[in-house]
Image (cartoon, rainbow, N blue to C red; front, side, top):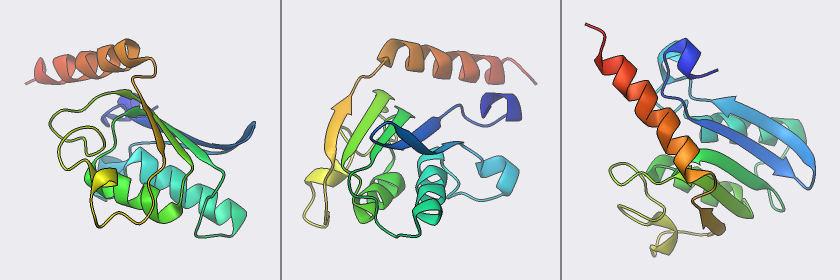
Length: 136
Protein backbone atom coordinates (compact mmCIF):
# COMPACT_ATOMS: atom_id res chain seq x y z
CA UNK A 1 0.00 0.00 0.00
CA UNK A 2 1.16 3.58 0.54
CA UNK A 3 4.17 2.65 2.72
CA UNK A 4 5.33 0.03 0.20
CA UNK A 5 5.39 2.78 -2.42
CA UNK A 6 7.48 5.00 -0.11
CA UNK A 7 4.50 7.23 0.63
CA UNK A 8 3.45 8.35 4.09
CA UNK A 9 1.14 5.47 5.14
CA UNK A 10 -2.20 7.21 5.28
CA UNK A 11 -5.22 5.37 3.96
CA UNK A 12 -8.83 6.40 3.47
CA UNK A 13 -12.04 4.48 2.83
CA UNK A 14 -15.31 6.16 1.86
CA UNK A 15 -18.52 4.24 2.54
CA UNK A 16 -22.25 4.67 2.12
CA UNK A 17 -24.07 2.32 4.44
CA UNK A 18 -22.30 -1.02 4.02
CA UNK A 19 -21.03 -0.25 0.50
CA UNK A 20 -17.38 0.73 0.01
CA UNK A 21 -17.40 3.50 -2.59
CA UNK A 22 -13.66 4.08 -2.71
CA UNK A 23 -10.38 3.46 -0.97
CA UNK A 24 -7.06 5.18 -1.44
CA UNK A 25 -3.62 5.70 0.01
CA UNK A 26 -1.35 8.71 -0.25
CA UNK A 27 0.18 9.06 -3.73
CA UNK A 28 1.84 12.48 -3.59
CA UNK A 29 5.28 11.16 -4.56
CA UNK A 30 4.07 8.70 -7.17
CA UNK A 31 1.88 11.27 -8.94
CA UNK A 32 4.09 14.31 -8.24
CA UNK A 33 0.93 15.90 -6.88
CA UNK A 34 0.86 17.61 -3.48
CA UNK A 35 -2.94 17.25 -3.42
CA UNK A 36 -2.87 13.45 -3.81
CA UNK A 37 -3.64 12.78 -0.15
CA UNK A 38 -5.61 9.61 0.60
CA UNK A 39 -8.73 11.58 1.54
CA UNK A 40 -8.72 13.65 -1.65
CA UNK A 41 -8.21 10.59 -3.85
CA UNK A 42 -10.99 8.67 -2.09
CA UNK A 43 -13.36 11.64 -2.43
CA UNK A 44 -12.53 12.04 -6.13
CA UNK A 45 -13.12 8.35 -6.83
CA UNK A 46 -16.42 8.23 -4.91
CA UNK A 47 -17.70 11.39 -6.64
CA UNK A 48 -16.82 9.93 -10.04
CA UNK A 49 -18.48 6.64 -9.15
CA UNK A 50 -21.69 8.38 -8.02
CA UNK A 51 -21.49 11.05 -10.74
CA UNK A 52 -21.92 13.73 -8.07
CA UNK A 53 -19.85 16.49 -6.51
CA UNK A 54 -21.47 15.88 -3.13
CA UNK A 55 -21.40 12.80 -0.91
CA UNK A 56 -24.22 13.25 1.62
CA UNK A 57 -24.91 10.15 3.65
CA UNK A 58 -21.31 8.99 3.16
CA UNK A 59 -18.72 8.37 5.85
CA UNK A 60 -14.95 8.72 5.56
CA UNK A 61 -12.49 6.60 7.55
CA UNK A 62 -8.86 7.73 7.54
CA UNK A 63 -5.80 6.66 9.52
CA UNK A 64 -4.57 10.18 10.34
CA UNK A 65 -6.29 13.40 11.34
CA UNK A 66 -6.91 15.29 8.08
CA UNK A 67 -4.94 18.40 7.16
CA UNK A 68 -6.60 21.70 6.31
CA UNK A 69 -6.76 20.91 2.57
CA UNK A 70 -8.46 17.59 3.20
CA UNK A 71 -10.81 19.08 5.80
CA UNK A 72 -11.88 21.63 3.19
CA UNK A 73 -12.55 18.87 0.66
CA UNK A 74 -14.52 16.90 3.25
CA UNK A 75 -16.64 19.97 3.92
CA UNK A 76 -17.25 20.74 0.23
CA UNK A 77 -18.16 17.10 -0.43
CA UNK A 78 -20.72 17.27 2.40
CA UNK A 79 -19.46 14.05 3.97
CA UNK A 80 -21.72 12.99 6.83
CA UNK A 81 -19.20 11.50 9.27
CA UNK A 82 -15.43 11.58 9.60
CA UNK A 83 -13.65 8.83 11.53
CA UNK A 84 -9.90 9.13 11.97
CA UNK A 85 -7.22 7.19 13.82
CA UNK A 86 -4.11 9.02 14.96
CA UNK A 87 -4.15 12.68 15.93
CA UNK A 88 -1.76 14.96 14.05
CA UNK A 89 -0.68 17.77 16.35
CA UNK A 90 1.58 19.36 13.69
CA UNK A 91 -0.46 19.05 10.51
CA UNK A 92 -3.96 18.13 11.59
CA UNK A 93 -6.77 20.63 11.14
CA UNK A 94 -9.72 18.86 12.74
CA UNK A 95 -8.93 18.77 16.46
CA UNK A 96 -5.56 20.55 16.17
CA UNK A 97 -4.20 23.56 14.31
CA UNK A 98 -6.91 25.57 12.58
CA UNK A 99 -9.75 23.28 13.76
CA UNK A 100 -11.28 23.86 10.32
CA UNK A 101 -14.77 22.55 11.06
CA UNK A 102 -15.15 25.11 13.85
CA UNK A 103 -14.14 28.07 11.67
CA UNK A 104 -16.48 30.66 10.18
CA UNK A 105 -15.40 29.74 6.63
CA UNK A 106 -16.57 26.13 7.00
CA UNK A 107 -19.76 25.51 5.02
CA UNK A 108 -20.46 22.00 6.31
CA UNK A 109 -19.04 20.12 9.28
CA UNK A 110 -19.31 16.35 9.48
CA UNK A 111 -19.82 14.45 12.69
CA UNK A 112 -16.27 13.79 13.92
CA UNK A 113 -14.99 10.69 15.67
CA UNK A 114 -11.26 10.78 16.39
CA UNK A 115 -9.08 8.13 17.98
CA UNK A 116 -10.39 5.13 16.00
CA UNK A 117 -7.65 2.47 16.43
CA UNK A 118 -5.46 5.40 17.38
CA UNK A 119 -2.54 3.45 18.84
CA UNK A 120 -2.27 1.11 15.84
CA UNK A 121 -2.41 4.04 13.41
CA UNK A 122 0.17 6.03 15.39
CA UNK A 123 2.45 2.98 15.63
CA UNK A 124 2.27 2.49 11.85
CA UNK A 125 3.25 6.11 11.24
CA UNK A 126 6.04 6.11 13.85
CA UNK A 127 7.48 2.91 12.36
CA UNK A 128 7.39 4.38 8.84
CA UNK A 129 9.20 7.58 9.83
CA UNK A 130 11.70 5.74 12.05
CA UNK A 131 12.66 3.48 9.12
CA UNK A 132 12.78 6.43 6.75
CA UNK A 133 15.20 8.34 9.00
CA UNK A 134 17.50 5.31 9.35
CA UNK A 135 18.32 5.28 5.61
CA UNK A 136 21.05 7.61 4.30
